[in-house]
Image: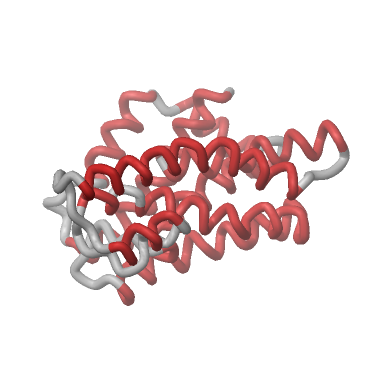
Length: 212
């Protein structure tokens, strides 16, 4: 999910830049707000209504945190609002990614994406030892970064090599490798530090294969 999201958002930003000669950050954030806020607000109001009826239970501060895209901070294990942690990760990332892409350009943004791909596995090991599904931004940023890098690579020599590899790789084989990389039988440290990043790259390869 994160890989696909990173690819789509970055591809749209690059396409806007190619068509208009620039990227409107105000336009980007306005479109994100129109797309995300209406369903989120409906859901959050519905949760308050359900809580008043005694159907669900959650702390008010948890509700407020989730509303402001901080649902991945200090999670309490409750699924009522807890499943919105991934939305929080996305919105935190997209708060800064378009700014970096516009400010640093394609090459600079690619460097940031590659750095994120290195930092995130280490963050999972150091900040969330013993967890395979930590909700923090740093622990999940590599999936988004791989997707962003895949979009940034289109039209470059590196991207051409990546796409060539994707064309030679049967989709079923890539899917099998992704499945194997996420098996819980793999030791946890190896899974979060190596297997997950490999799965992200394989997923980006599938995305490039579908695009091309």
